[in-house]
Length: 152
Image (cartoon, rainbow, N blue to C red; front, top):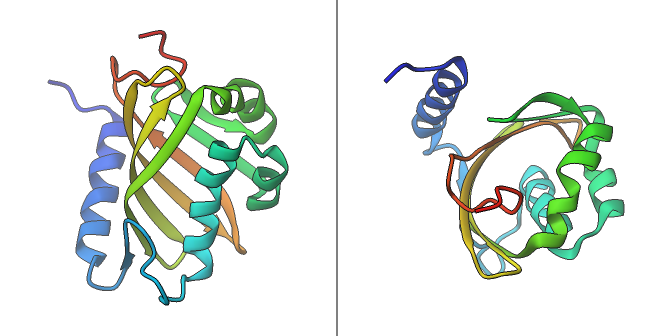
């Protein structure tokens, strides 16, 4: 199997984050009474915006110059992200964060999502934060996993 640049990047990110786990904040759900770091709040707000279909919240947490990448998108702008990806919010019923790792201005999230028609999808996401906002976001998902717009 041939490894692509994106696969190599994901492997690199996972290795870096795995090495940093001792220093990272990790929580599937914030523990009661545990103060949440600002960057973790921003990352969690991203998923809240999708669940609540709240574009206004989304615009408050995305930095100027924001880019989105996935296996089918390469560093698209916020405008293109809204046109291409935001309509999926209306197909998402719920998102459960399985793991959230935050280390300084980097975050890695694994989550399960459910579509409005009951299909499960599982993604891993990598965020780079800039001045308290999401500067870039990379979504990693595979073929045939029922992502809301996959048509499966």
